[in-house]
Each structure stands twice: as C-alpha cells, then as structure tokens.
Image (cartoon, rainbow, N blue to C red; front, side):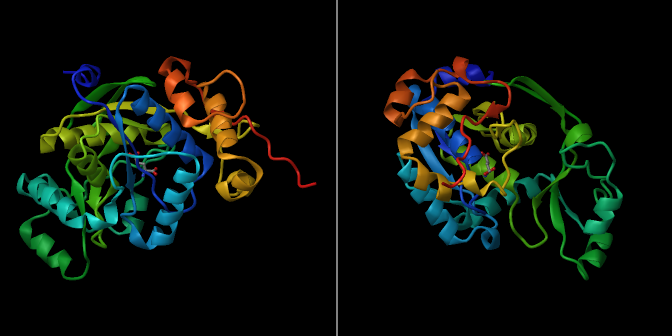
Amino acid sequence: MSGMEHSMNRETVGRFAPTPSGRLHLGNLLCCLLAYLSARSKGGKFLLRIEDLDVPRCPKRLSDQCIEDLRFLGFDWDEEPLFQSERTAIYQKYFDTLTSLSLVYPCFCTRAQLHAAIAPNLGDREPVYSRACANLSAEEIAERARTRRPAMRMRVPDEVISFTDGHFGPVSENLARDCGDYIIRRSDGLFGYQLAVVIDDALSGVSEIVRGRDILFSTPRQMHLQKTLGFASPDYYHIPLLMDSHGRRLAKRDKDLDLTALAKAMTAEQILGMLAFSAGVIPENRPADLSELVRIFDWKNISREDIRLAYTPQAAP
Ligand code: GLU
C-alpha cells in the first residue's frame, strides 16, 4: 500500500519536530506553519516534539523559548510536547531489537579515518561509509573496544527505496550505494536522529510529515527502519528551502530575520501572513491568523521552487 493510500483510511496526525540548538528562525517557522496547516486543514491532530537528543547543544532554556515562540504565533497542539531527551529507554529497546537482528555493528573509525575515506563530489550529502568495520571478528571487536568506545552503525541493504513525496514527487535511493551504513548510536552513547525520529513518529501515530527538503534523503533510511521495526510509513511532504528576499539561503548571521528582531517589528499575524504569502498559501502579503489560513490551505498553491521571503528588514531610522 502506498503512503497516499494509507492517508485515506487513517486519521491525519501531523507534527513539528524542531531541534532547539538555537532560537527558531523563519525557515523553522515556515515548516511549522505548513505542517500545521496541512494537518489541521484535513481536520487532523497536530503534535509538537522537541528534538533535544543532543542535550549539551539543546539546553532547556532554548526548548522553553521555542515553545514560547510557537505560542506567540498562535500555534497549538493536541498533546503535551514530547522531549527526546526523556526517551532514551524507549530508543534503547528498539536499538536492542535491531542488534538482535544482527543489523547493528560497532565502528571504531576515528574522525580522521572517516575523513580520509571520503569520496569527492558528494555535495551536501554525507559520505558513504567505507564499511571498514563491517566485518570485524569478535576478537577484533574486543581488542579495539579496549582503547576506544565505538559508534554503532546500521547495516543497510543493497536495496532501492522509493516513495512519492506529496510535494516533491517521486524519490528513489539505493541505501547501500547512495547512503551507506550510518550511525544510529554515537560513540558518546547518544542515539542518532534517524532512529529516534522513526520511533517517536510511529509511537505517536504520526501519519504525515512535513519538513524541509534538506532532510529529503533521510527519508529512505527512515522508511527502511520503519519496515524493519514493523511500523507503517507516514506520508511525506518535503518543502523547499526559505531564501531571503534576494534569493540567498537564510543564515544564522541574518539576525534581523530572527524572532527576537521580528517580534519587535511585527505582530504575530503580520509574521504569519508574510510567511503564508511567501510560500503561496495566500495571494497577497497581509496579516493573517491561523484559523483563516487553515480554511484556505491547499498544497496545490505551495511553491515548488525555493521560497523567497517577502520581507526586507528596514534599516533602523
Ligand atoms: N529536528 C529536525 C530539525 O529541526 C527535523 C526532524 C524532522 O522533521 O524529521 O531539522
């Protein structure tokens, strides 16, 4: 059954899953907006999950700020937010299942070794792992483990994973060739994003995922994990990246476009209206609230190219 058929007989449950390693920026907010509108326009539920797995990088202060910013804009969610930092025992259970299926192996490669093995021309995709540690004997593992704590890698099959993204269209990837065995637990013991996301979405009953196109090529890995762990795959909508008004990628240096500055200059409705207009939800740049946007939302109107922000910060008077 394809993802699209799934959605016809399941309740729609959407979600926003920010990583609070900094203050939310407009790219995050656009993603939240489209995820929210997509789910709510189908009469569905909306959930918030704080992806603070990497606790040192994601302090509580930033999670609190993130929730406060979303509330300021008028977003609401149907259950208490989940915090990944509190869910290690759950990830461990599924990690143990993968281990018992012999799908996980320890990798002792140093950063320098990984770097030396990088093939050129991979663009912004991660390098494919050389599998240097894929077939170590029990003795070799024991020997290496004496001096180094390993990361754990997921063995991927030589298999093409295909799906139809609700916004981007058809996507295919051969896991062994294009992605390679990837880390699902870091050497410091933290579980990796791919595993945590798959488990959390499945256990929360998430039926559609709206997120940035920069994560598009995580999806085949996640679908493979879903199949392996016996979870249904949700529908996916990967949205274009948000550019500034000159067509340049938004960057952390664009301080005048972060919420601290924007919330001083604009109301919540002005910010939402500007984002909604930039993405194609509404045909003119004007203030709008979420209940109105939910009524008129249609994926057909959403830009398929990079989205240009319809806002140029004014120079201070
Ligand atoms: N936490 C990820 C991020 O903030 C998004 C993960 C997802 O939507 O699957 O980029």
